[in-house]
Length: 103
Image (cartoon, rainbow, N blue to C red; front, side):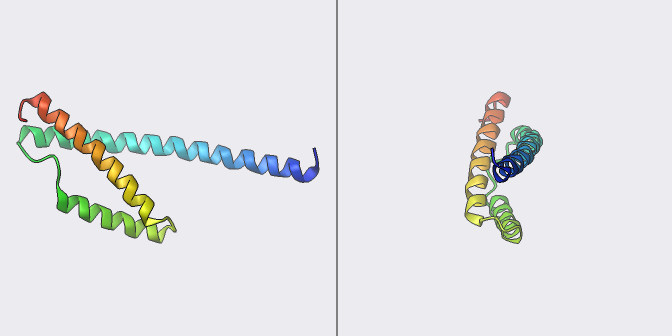
């Protein structure tokens, strides 16, 4: 193995460890986010509130796209991620309604 190849392999391994650490942090952050949204779903179910709040979702998306742009991350990616998260949150909120008998 050449010295250049060894250096590349070492750099690659270091970057992959960083990615692994960041992925772990993302999973933990998402888990915490869903703990919060699950509590919101339970609260909404108890009080007969709608699972979705379009004004809140639009404000969130606008804020997240602004943060993405500031962080040199493509806003289109954030839109897709936000849509995925919201779909899961709404599914969880609907399940909370069903469990509480308020559907």
